[in-house]
Length: 108
Image (cartoon, rainbow, N blue to C red; front, side, top):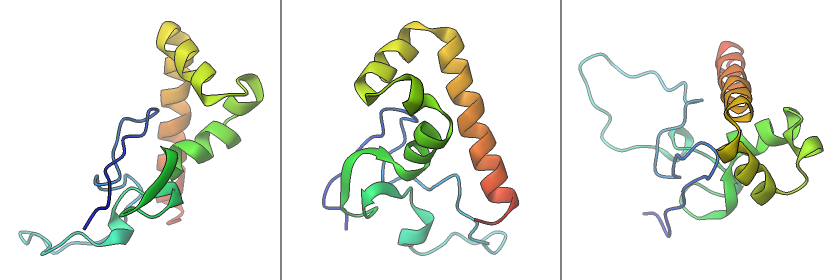
């Protein structure tokens, strides 16, 4: 049971969404009975069922490791500039997608 639903302002996914990093193998033609916590989008702090903070773990990692934090000290500033700058939005999407693809390729 979720104590609260939060939406990440960077990827627009919620803590109730299945993570793009999930590598849970399912049986073809069978739906899982219930989503396990490990399959859900992990939050940067707290858990999927009780998220703390504004960002999901994927976006938090991309924001820091992708160099966005170096250029935009505050998340609010970055969100404002990204909204008004299509090049920055495209750069973010490329960094996010690259992180997801490489994480899934290495299984981590």
